[in-house]
Image 1 (spheres, helix red, strand yellow):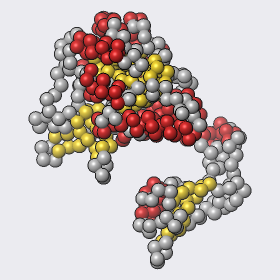
Image 2 (cartoon, one colour):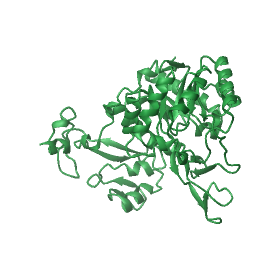
Image 3 (tube, rainbow, N blue to C red):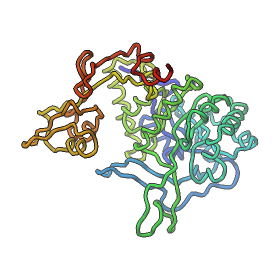
Image 4 (tube, rainbow, N blue to C red):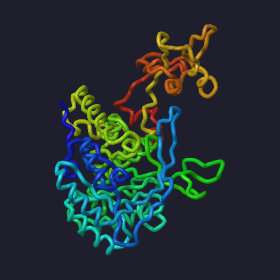
Length: 434
């Protein structure tokens, strides 16, 4: 049986599935239920300092993007950090950690960008026995306007400075949570590393407005006729998050920096993909808010079964496996040639592949009078659009052409010179270097 145990920064948990800092981790009741359901760890919802109390809206806090079947694709939230008393939270964290010593508990923190504010709260958090802290440098709404959250995360110098304070006044692992609302994610990650961060977690939510109410003419969620930008999360942000994770994992300046992956993790497959891109664990929010805490049981069983099928005995076996294969466009092998192939036994003659290719692509699919669809190899550039729009899984596949055959589109011999691609004359990067 596969061993799903993770050791992230010396913090052991029975599986790589942690709940992210969010409404599901706002109080003892929720966290206990989460641990009973099987979650390996939690990041407690962000604590503030001893300043003015946080006041959340008493109205709609979420805006949603739905798929055609009303499946939740993304949630925009305008909720702030915890509005519960600091000391109540600290007491609850201490009790839960004492009762669940085998689970990871990380405390998310956001206080003003002042050394004394961090110096004051860190000993209080350390006294709870929690396993580490996560610095919330990502929240894009409400707190950012107060000079915290993403207002800090968008300035590498601030990230480095605050991280140094935390490493000075706190003895356990420090994780820096990064905002995606920035041009180059590598710069804040490098700043966190320079400041002594033990790891980074990403992504936090994306600045967004999900919809506008066309009757009241206000963004949703609407509070007394007014709306605002919020933080977007859920399955829709996964591609953005994974790209940013990969940028950090393959950047020489941050290579080896432990990463906790966040963004749209809904299934075991999502988690496995993040881990192959270098993540030591994953954090989940939207899936739990949509389906409840017990969804983790499907994630655990699915990941375990896949690992058994692949012969992986531990998370470490495939952690980072996709990083060497993630590269810049200029290094892709232009000698690789593939063509679309339609399985006539599976085809339902819906014509979606034909419509998409004929109207918006390369006119590489022919339709006969009896609605039989075939690929015109001479026109096919292997763009994959037909595969993506086909409603029947694996009905259309991309088949690589064998070396030595003639590409009917170009009339050239197909090559597969992977070993020497960096110096091959067809490589645009090599050509530019010459």
